[in-house]
Length: 177
Image 1 (spheres, rainbow, N blue to C red):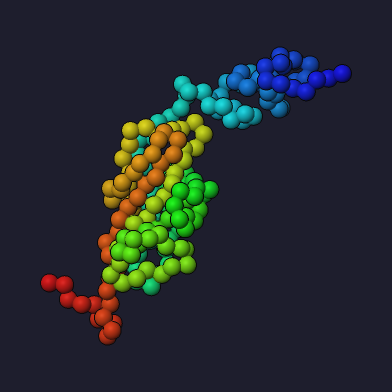
Image 2: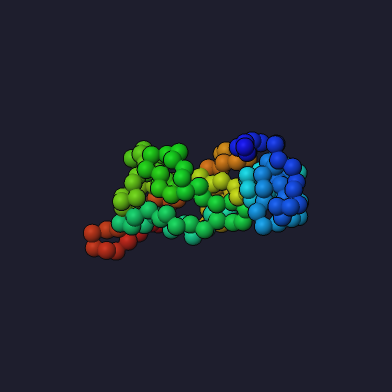
């Protein structure tokens, strides 16, 4: 009788027309060549010597808070990392992004609309793609320097926007001299 597969109990067998991952020893379907890539498509193992360091993080396309508008949750990011869509690090986090009303001292929901005179901070949780990790870096939001904290496998980037513009009841912006 055949026993179930356990880690390390298989050997390369050319009669099955497949090879085994050098890291996890599982069959790599559809190939007879040895696994030589930095990332195993079967087990997800990443060869540490092949990891690329991310040295800059750029988040672009963040709509600045405007009085009456809702928070923006559709950003673009650079190569080698992505927004962690499953992150739940902050209250009201939506698809890895959270907005904080500095004036009121609380996180806001995606149904919130920005309030005149209030200042907001955006948070985005990022994770590296397979074969990458965060190294010594700098971060930006819409081209402006941003704060960041984290590790080589998770990074939170935050940026404080200027206060939302106060509109007068006549629709004419107040003079700021």
